[in-house]
Image (cartoon, rainbow, N blue to C red):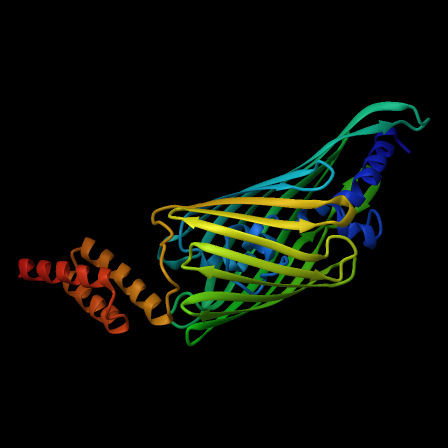
Length: 383
């Protein structure tokens, strides 16, 4: 065995129990790129790493189901910092860009995992200096709405996928792999509530190869369901996922989120079926205009807690500090935005008709009323 292969095995033996809970009961060396299984989104983690059947934050979509990206209505950038186990840290940066004309959403992400230097030894057992270890992944994603009611573009059938390149480094040895994700999401309005069902397959591909040691891709399959209901004007999201890594047993992930005035979020979740890393999850978030801050806390038994911090920023329009919108209010809001665009295009009469529809749905919409006065005045001037 070559010295560098030996160094790689020593590093893997040191890192695997702390780095990859799945590997602790799956058998060493069965999958490469285990870091790709770490859910980076604080929101998703706070809900027990569930959400394959829900729409949510940018990082959560990338981690659980790329189809959820199609629901992104804003240009958005997001960052997360994960203070994990035994001095290990990971960071992720992502950007989502909705395409004009409802042609879908593009996104890109960069994921870096850093491991403290590990003592290395050669074949004779003599010290060979420190072994540096770390992982890197870059991905591009695309998602769009495939079908659904024309009057409600936020429900229906959505599909998405990602292609990514991942690289692992253990001392002088490096291995890379091209992988892909795929997912589908179906959302259905039930009055003021919403039901969601989703399927996803992640990190599929040819796998990693260190010298003569081949490791398969860390594929994970998910099926999820979610239900959003309104209580006293605020939404409560319930989610349930079934997760199956290809090389280990299945796990059940469940979580809940309560949003107060779309400003404060409280989350809790639970993961069962994992020997290490299962159990209770807690988290929360605060939205301040354009900014969203999220945090989650996980426990890994004797390895201690893991803390995740996330920050996202939406471009163009601020996150409104308002109560949950009913279906009619959301439709009125969309009509008002379309009317605003019509006014810019000097289509004043069409704007009046669109705003009339908005006010039928939501008679108390102040924004629509003010825009109606403006549109009517422009109609009179243009005669």
